[in-house]
Each structure stands twice: as structure tokens, then as C-alpha cells.
Length: 157
Image (cartoon, rainbow, N blue to C red):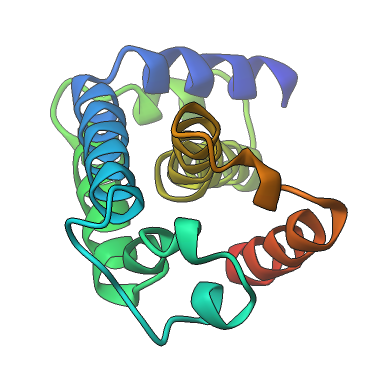
């Protein structure tokens, strides 16, 4: 199982669509947070605004199911579909003696890790970095960080 996981991580890091999604998500996250912090584009009535974290309002876009499904389905389409093409390696993995459950579990776990990275971790990290760069870092106290941790933990589940 460990070798299957390593092989899947290798394939994910070599996938060009994965890197395009990372670059797009990072760029969009930075742009939205800069627009909201500078006051050029405001969102009001979001859960982040109600919790006193109005500088993180751009994260509301990333918690919308439409955006989440768009990114995850794009990653799934280009990452998983290559396995079942004519040159895919899933046939070789099955012929090498690995159980199908292990093969599909490794694919599922690495795909879940990649989708978590693209849809949750990158927007959250860029939000914290942009907030600190614009001098709004005083809102990052223990209460707000626990709220963000609980909210994104629930969203991840």
C-alpha cells in the first residue's frame, strides 16, 4: 500500500492540471483578499463577518459548493480519467498482484489530499498571508483561529 501511495503522489505531482488549479486558486484567492481588504469590493453578511473576521470574507467564495465542485470535478476529470485510458497504469497495478481495494484506496486518498490542498489549504494560507501583509494581523487571535479551524474542519468533513 505504501508503494501505491508513493506512485499516486508521483502521478499527482506530475499532473499539469493539478498545478494549473493550484496557480488559479492561489491567484484568485490573493486577488479577492486584496480587493476586500482594500475596500474596493466588499462582502457583507457572511459568516466570517458575523464572527468578526471580515478580512477573511473572500473565503466565502471558496466555501460555496459550486466553486468546490468545479475545482474538484476538474481535478477528478484529468487525474482519474488518465488511469483508464489506453496508456493508463491501472492494468499494470492489477497485474502486479495488488488488490483492487488497495489500488482504489490509494487513488482515493491521494485524490482527496490533492483536492483538500487546492480547495481548502491554499485559500486559507493565502488569506492569512495577505491579511498579515496588509497590516490586519491583529484579528488573528486564539478565538478567531479556533473559529477558522472548526469551520474549515467541518467543511473538510
